[in-house]
Length: 244
Image 1 (cartoon, rainbow, N blue to C red):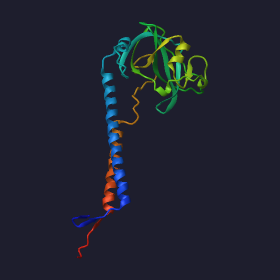
Image 2 (cartoon, helix red, strand yellow; image 1 turned 90 degrees about the horizontal axis):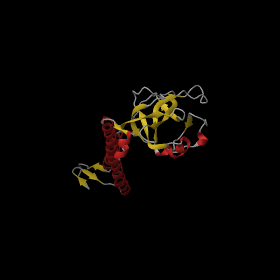
Image 3 (cartoon, rainbow, N blue to C red; image 1 turned 135 degrees about the vertical axis):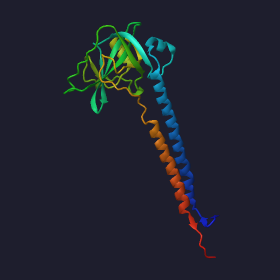
Image 4 (cartoon, rainbow, N blue to C red; image 1 turned 90 degrees about the vertical axis):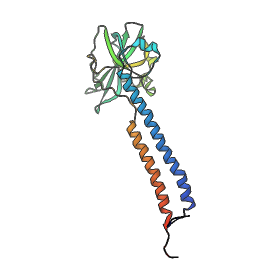
């Protein structure tokens, strides 16, 4: 095929490879852009939820809106005798636990786990940290969250301490309800960072790759598709000789 002063003569196998790979690479780029849009919607939704005025927990549950990171308030008493230490929790590069304290709600028979923040591992894992807290009726303001599904399992074999506070690797509400004797709500409250009865807190949504990172991945896939196409045409195109 002549294109001006050039002769384009592609081979069969280079053509087949290019015809297959270029659309695949381009489709991967499109997929990454779709992922970026989805992640951006999550980020925007989180920002919108946190901007909303606090809603009473019971009212939020009754509304049927189960969106995470909604700011809510709840009143009750902490059950300081039955606290959980969620193991394998990292904060600023240090190993430690997230402190999950049951809050027995004042306006119902229910109980909700409140994540009061992170505490470091002591000199030995046999020495559990002190977990002080108020014994009187408290009003907490927090963000609603849901434990990841892969963490919804309590494995007593992995518990280094049989008493309380109890170190756990995973959390399974149904099993905990039997141990606590309380009805646990299917959410976990992330205590506000400025609350006085908490520990280290720096709540951030876990989305994996950011929208910008997905866009960067998309650019890489589109660039690979373009480079492959340019190589295909460049290798298979030759300048015609001026000699007749």
